[in-house]
Image (cartoon, rainbow, N blue to C red; front, top):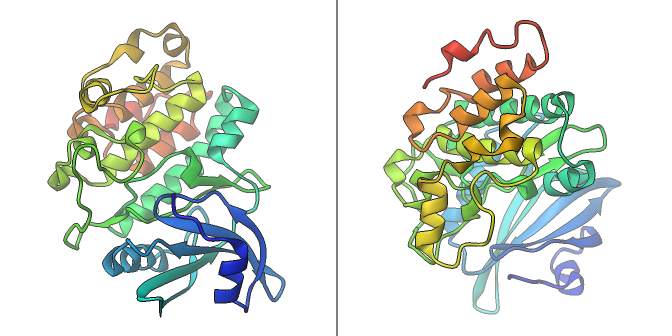
Length: 293
C-alpha cells in the first residue's frame, strides 16, 4: 500500500487545504482537498508507476466531459529525493463509493438499479466512444454523489485502444481487482480486451447489486487456478435461487453481461442502459433480441 501523510502532502502542495486522507491503494495516495472554496481529489502517484501509465490516466480522463465520469483538473510531476512524483487533481465526488452504497441499501430494487446502472452505462458508453477501456471497474471505483448520481473514477489501468498496451500482466502479480475481471483480462489476452471487458465487470457489479453476492466466488480463491475456474469456467449462478427469482429481463441482461466469451456479450453499454431503463415496464423485453448473443 502506497501511503503519504497529510503533513508530507501539504508541504508538497501548499496551495491546497487538506481536508482528509482517502483510502490509499498500491498505486496512489489520495486526499480530499480544497482550493478557493472548491473541493477536489488530489492523488499522489507511487514512484514505481511509470510516467507512461500516469500520462495515460491523465489523457484518458482529460479527453472526456461527461457527468458520469470524473474529470481531471490538473496534472504535474516533480523530482524529489532522486525519484519522480506525479500528482493528479480531479473532480471530488461527494458521497460514498458504490460498495458502501450497496452495503447500506442491501439488494437494490428495480428502480434503484435503474437509478444507478442506467447512468453508469452512459458513462461506460462515453469511455467506449473515446476508445477507452477502464479495466478496473468495481464498486470502489464508482462514486455515488448526494443526489444518487454515479460517477466512474480512477483510470490508472485504463487502456486506450489506439495505443500500445503498457500494462504488464503476469499470474500472481496482476494489477487491478481480479474478482471483477473478465476471462480475457484474467488470462492476460490483451488483444481481446475491448469495451466488452468493462461490460463483464459491470455484470458482476450488477449481479452483486441485485442478488447480494458475487456470481461465482463464494470464498477467496487460494490459487490462481481456483480463481481461473471461478471466473473463466463456472456458471453456477444460473442455478442460484436468488438469481432465478429476479425479474426475467434483468436475468437475461445479467446472463449476457457475464458471458465468458466476449463476442456473446452485449454490443455496447448504451444497449444495456436502454434495456435496463425499461425494467418494470410493459414493453421491457423489446430490446433483448437485439443484444449480441
